Figure 1 (tube, rainbow, N blue to C red):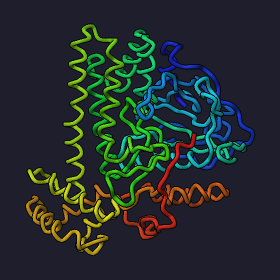
Figure 2: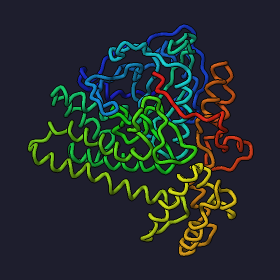
Figure 3: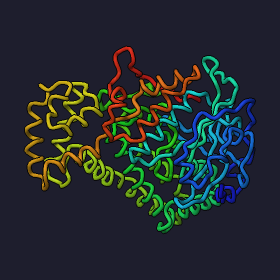
Length: 469
């Protein structure tokens, strides 16, 4: 592994150096060979001892990062990597990437926790993050899963596991908040310079970096919305400066569409419901802007400019949302009534509890109405849509191709993920491997995976997801 650990060269108060805690009997469950190749890593180096934290690869400088954050709107002045260790940064042809072990033992930021992860959340994050990557959404990646041979106590005892996670970086809005809250301008400046060099090299100072982060988050959340994805825990410590999806805890893809859908077991008031995600993203960005103010010479002028920058989230979000949803119904060029056409479709889907993924995929079929759950609800929409399609340049086959590229056949449905986890707890990882293989090509109609396209039966429905901490 070609390590070059730039974060470890930042001021020492930004992290704590420590090694992962060894485990008794590490065993490999999965290694993501294509990702290893992309990182320039020989998979033979990824032994169970390395993946569980018992042995360190040459060049690693393990550390736990410090950060703070707003969790469900409440301020927590110290969070940090409570169950994760950053081994270091690997530099390859695709740039600089963090290699992190998640579930690797206690750190100074564990807050009475054991620093471990049990198998379920580790399998879940592997499946979800790799599915998001295949869907073209910026995301952290999963390099490997290893079991530890030890039990982790939650509501009961579960097998322990470690996820090897890859990210452009693990720097969060909460990382900036941590130093701003301590009036540590020196560390705040060092962190800003680091993020600019690493993620926004064309940015001219902190305000310009903020503009870049706003744009990246606007595009990211629009992609979530276009796929029916609900992050579930959009705290500021789960908002990455890189613009990647990070921390797959109580997240889910919707089956039946409704804008107020919530899956997180801890989101009692729907703060992070599907429809609220754009507003929450903007709120999180406002917290980043506030944390950057100590770096500005003229505070009043900076507040005014930062407010304008954060309010600028709306325009790129709406533009990307419209581009994505136009493509989902086969449209390439813009017309004034397109938004009304799209929201009319979504309204009907909500009323009839239509499956989000399957409904949009049904539009790619010539006999679309035959594949819609409640065709009667669509009688007044389908003719308008077909008339709008007729005004598009190109052949009908082009519109079909546009829709097939925008509308996946497969998503990691909650009940299938849960089935893979439950099988894994018995030592059967075949469903886990099969699900990953299917989700690697989410837009392909593969008859071998037809069962994975079906919405859950009533007895299979998963309505609550958990953090797994």
